[in-house]
Image (cartoon, rainbow over all chains, first blue to last red; front, side):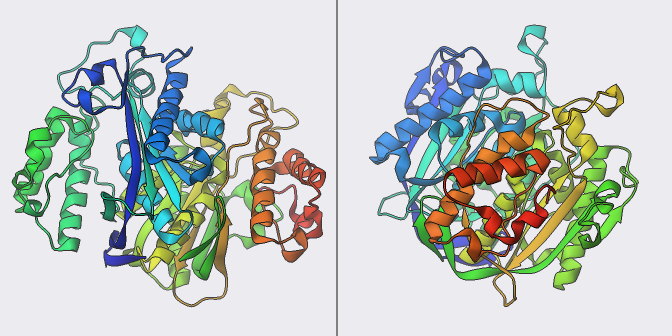
Length: 268
Length: 268
């Protein structure tokens, strides 16, 4: 059971444990500051497949397989996978979940899908729907560029604020069994739209929503940034991350008081 | 809390109650056999907006507003809305949830989104995330044709198996408070793909997955079709519904023994 804290915010009576996790990333991601954290770096952006979309599915399957191995489980132990991606109709997830033949809840949270998946999968485990659940997310630079901006073959010039969508997939196995790290609570986000409509400045478009969720979670839990080792967001990038800090500073919240600033600017 | 029955299937210890619900539909749907069931029939397919996509958002907002009225609640009473639609990036839902500024979990389950939303929203309420949650879904004939088949202005001829995507939105308010009708359990579906790739024969493409979920749920609960007043699916249509009956008959399950057959063939 969860304890209601405020609208959309809750604390788990007993944290749901992370029993296994894996991240499989592309070549560029492997060269970045987090490169050594990935379970596998795949240099071929097609991952041996005919299309980037098929490759994205394979990234998911690889991440799920590695996470299961690390958890000492098989796919048959997983009661439900909450998965999503950025492609139309979430076909990256649909094709990988078709392979796995697992009970599947499809999510569309864009850049928030991993957090959304962790939240729903941990609530599903907590509620007793299954002993083990999973959250899975993928994106692929080449499928995302084709989907949201321009086909790569068009050769469009990138703007200074353009970000590089991650070629990667992450999978997390959640469990009510004992473990060390867990999901202790959550805060479900709201849409905050300050009318940034530049598809090459997604960090600025997303920062207000990140600020809203962090502010609401801190208020609901009665905590401050100094209570946390890390405050980590995804996707805000070099433009959006400082903006997030600024928005929260104007509300009297200095998230630089957590250890997060060392990681700001990296899309993790 | 939920009782685990089998992989993906569960029974609520206490059913989560439906405190309010509403359906707002388009002109064609209003003329159909369920026309009198809708709370509102909107004859203008643009619903007073400039685009069909904006109209689809307005259908959602109208459905949510009516469901809240019937539940005697306001949007501030809702802890989370689980919402989705068929448009790329689920913009129908994103734009309506932006208006409502409510904690929002975006779903992509295509035709299963309403069931997926009911399942997640009821688990969220059951787990204590919020006293009241909501599930919302929309589709629009004209946005779906443009998205999945051809722009309407192309004037393509429809095939005999083509279905008519519903122009409508439904909203359900779920609550742990007392009520009569409730969500007593669920079974999370798996992808069942028998390689039907005709975009004008979606009923046949989807029937195997419907059969799989119904079979798994009956087995998990130890029940038979005769135990149910209705077995209702969405979207299978005049081609897919008899196919669903046939697939299950081959497994020794006769869903015509429920009262459902009177409704088969209507996309509800």
